[in-house]
Every structure is written in C-alpha cells, then in structure tokens.
Image (cartoon, rainbow, N blue to C red; front, top):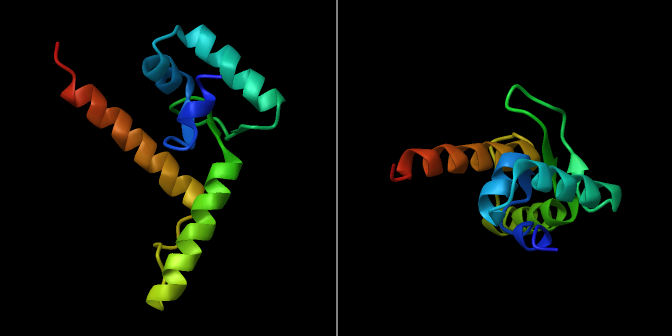
Amino acid sequence: MRLLSLSPGVPVIDSSGVAKRLEVSVQSALTALHTLEGASILTPLRASRWGQAWRADDVIDLLTDFEQRVSQRRGGRADDGVPLTERLARLTRRRERLGRVNEVP
C-alpha cells in the first residue's frame, strides 16, 4: 500500500528506487512491484542496462492529458517529440543520480 502513494510523484520506478524511498530491502520492493503488476496497477517496462522498471499507466495517462491541454492552450507543442513515458523515465534516472551525488557520506 505504501508503494501506491509513490505513484503520483514517481510514475516510473525501479526496485532500488522503491527500496530507498520506502526504506525496505530490494527483495521487498520487488515483491511489492510484482504484486502491483499482478493487479494491473503497474506495467513492466522493457529491461534496460539499468535493470527492470515499472510504470503507472493511469498516472501517465493523466499527465499526458494535462500536457495536451496545456499545449493546446499555448498553441504549440509541450514536448520534444519524445514519448512521455521515456521522458519520465529519464527524469527518474536523473533524480536518482542527483540523489546519489547529494548524499552525505
């Protein structure tokens, strides 16, 4: 249940991100991710060299709808042609890297 509360702020996440944010083991994070995947709340992304990640499609759909409405109001495009899921995944990876850089030893 605690993982669900992360979805709006982090619609694309991996097991290490869940473990860090919820202060649980990576194995517990994977169990939670697989449980939400089984309930069709999360969708697995194709594994990359960074590992497996999941996305919250309902949250991404809401963000996409919002982005399209904002873009229409401005009379232009709100994106750079890259799918929203990929841009969110990039932002998540950047945030993770920044978090590691800013950690105090």
